[in-house]
Image 1 (cartoon, helix red, strand yellow):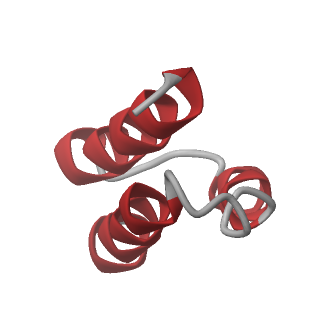
Image 2: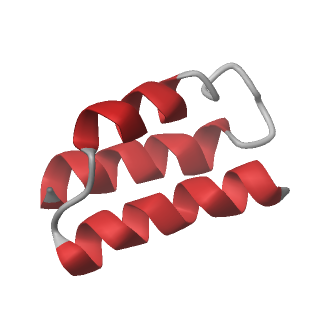
Length: 54
């Protein structure tokens, strides 16, 4: 996994721990990364965390 994948994971953690973030901006940025097969799974996990916790 590369920096983009770790960043996606961190955004999911921020949503889970702090329960707030700039949701629209973050979701838009993460969705742009879904086409990268090497990180698509962690991006989906981050999107799930954001949806659940923020």
